[in-house]
Amino acid sequence: MNGICFICDKEKTVRKNRKIGESICSACYRREVKSKEMCTLCQFEKPAYGRDDEGGAICRACYQREVKPKELCTLCQFLKRVAARNEQDGAICFACYRRDRRAKLKAEALQASRSN
Picture 1 (cartoon, rainbow, N blue to C red):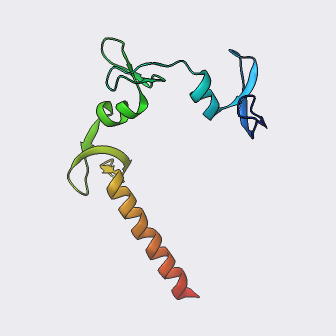
Picture 2 (cartoon, one colour):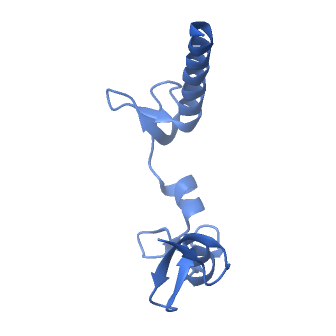
């Protein structure tokens, strides 16, 4: 629902927060309201994105970098985080996905310019 955020005073998509009783945007919620814990990997106080085996908090950046499962990319053959999957359910890393996407966009633009 669109409305004015109680914290940043900007018109955005907001949700009523029961904890503070006001409507706030998702950015202000993450920054100001969501409880923060000490990340067991980087030692910074941030919202918990995941937990380690002992129940310790792991922030989103550390989870993405250290914990998120990595697979062998079917295109470059490096062990990396998965951005997408091909038709055979093979992993495609972020670098290969972006490279492949740019190539497809260039080909589509070239084809469109030739048809005009």
